Image (cartoon, rainbow, N blue to C red):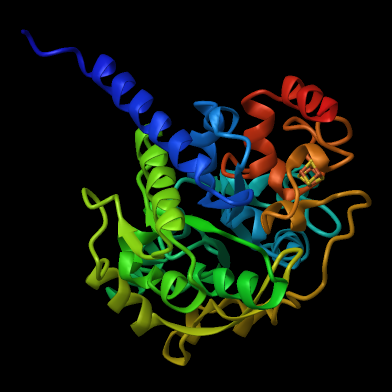
Length: 372
Ligand code: SF4
């Protein structure tokens, strides 16, 4: 017999995994909640309809894995002020550009005459800053995955003196601890983020099964990866043996990326940091070390008061980020808040849960869920 085309074999594997998931789900005593930490996993879940083919007692909930969604609004306003009042060139990623701040977004600041430039990378900001006479700032948003682009270039002395950094970097394991300790989010399983784990290593998630008894699978982003992760988690729940499984071994090692981790520890201090809509999370942010203060925007332009929140009446972003509400439970979803006219941060980024739900199903999901 000839070799079957890959897509047929993938479909067969998917059917088999789904059958196993259904068998395992029959052995569960109660409804369980599995969190997809990462926005890209949520993307896979929605694009392939995985949420809708799960047994009734298996609920897949999205988590806080969208760095744009959790960046405090005060950072947006801080950079708007620099662009509009201090004549500073502000560089930002496209995902951050339209995020509403407290007063307005960086897109709005640009329309008001501020010099705001969208870049694909920190390297783009460096190259452009070399051509500028005045001061420039880079709004550094992201998780562990994004920080090496900044820390490695600072270590190598490749950053022009007129380019300052606004560090809004956040670390992912601390928010999981915070959710379990402080918010008391009930989780029966976690699909840990694949991209972040390439940097911090699968082992960084071992605290979930060891300290909290939560089965955890580090997974890739193909639909089969996600189905396999769900099957593994159900298997561990049914057997009563929570463990950490690295299903994404083709990209993630146990110890992570040594170069990226070393550069992070040489350039940044780990500090308590605010998460938008959530509050101060212990040891979850990165701040430039003293020896890099010449590159720290706050040394020149003052500190950011992270704790000042944007008040958006009706918005349930913070609950969506913590897995406590689904986008359709927000009264603004696809009414006052749309991808074209976002009210909350979760509707802006391609990794934001509301944006993903709007893209894959939108109104039909809303109607279906409101009926049930
Ligand atoms: Fe926030 Fe908009 Fe989502 Fe509501 S629909 S939770 S306002 S992003």
